Length: 213
Image 1: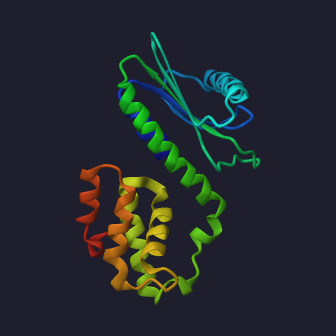
Image 2: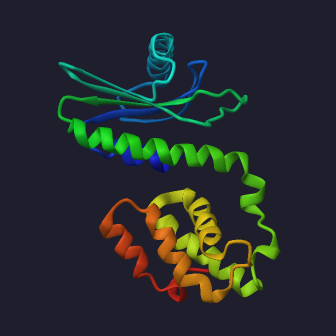
């Protein structure tokens, strides 16, 4: 998850990115060093109250962008998210100063929200993702190819690569086991999870045989 938030923080003008639970607790956060955790927690509680007030007016809200003189605040609901205690209704918050490009940040926020939703879903299925049934692969060699493919994709999308590769295998193979001959079709399918065209091309140009095993 940190890689998703760090990517947002790398955008010009972004000061802090937070995932806030339904109770107003900070589940994850990445911010510039000037901000102390106590201050961030206070901001999280205030944002949660704002979100709850918004929900009382519009029950189906998903996005909220607030622009003011000194910057921009963006909120994104995370559908299907579950916090450490099983609570639902977490949200992504991005705080940026006035140097930020609002349209770019809004686009990045929506992309990050989708990825966080997938991340939360993968956390719920973690045992299956970490220990896939061997029946999902034709043989140990095919399983190793899938593992190396996951490592290669991780260079561009971080830890969610295992989710994207699993989905790509399902899309290409359906109910049959993954075999070595499926590597390239699965690689092309998994490349769709990379937003940047440059990064997508770089991933597709990887030689799986040269990746670390």
